[in-house]
Length: 316
Image (cartoon, rainbow, N blue to C red; front, side):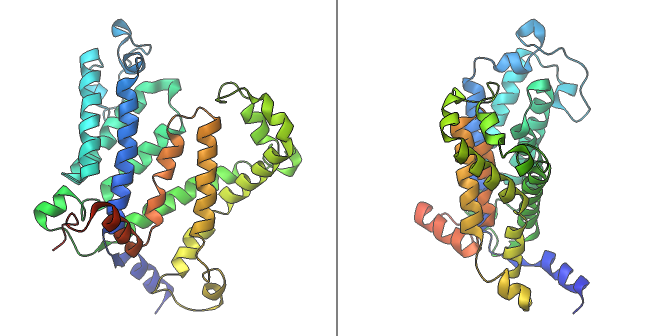
């Protein structure tokens, strides 16, 4: 078998759909949290509506793909769009008309993101990118209203899940590479974490306390930079640990141990630390909501059976 044949077979592999169910539910709940935050915010019209109706951004004609290209962002229009966002998030979480709900979330988010102007941040971009990938994935194949209604599927393609993992890996590795030569390295004294804890535009608390633990902030800086840069080792490790993977010295070394507890554990600590110390919105929770895509199908099945029982799987 040639390398090309192995490459094609890798993308054609199929698996149990339960990983997609866990990924859908977790992502949907975090998006629901985000929508709830929007609804509860007194500044929602300030962010999205016309200046005459309480907003701060003038209405320049947006691109054709934006909902606000077709509907002027009045207070009523914004209310309807936010309400539709809530309905779509509930539908996605429950797995009802799943692909349509995922597509609706993507379109709504693109419109809202475009209206944010300079207030848009990395979390908004993250939601947009991964919402598109959610549209491609068979998220409603099991443990969903769709599966209960239609019978679901015993197996689904693996490639959408692998695309999500590849995109998350690219995000982390690129973030690590752009830190090279800055305050994240030896040349900058590994001072990045200390500086950001004292940056009042991001810091959740007064950062004066960090001076007393400066060496610890240097260690954290070193760990984060290398962890992000080397994150590509995790999908490579998972690739080598597949039953269909070929043998050889690489599989016996890099593929010998499961790197998920280490790499994802460090990531969970990183994002929890970001949430506790910095004002980054829901960025940490949105990123952590992508970690279930690394589950194995048998792990996802056990998790769902323990939390939801067996009757909701919907696969006949």
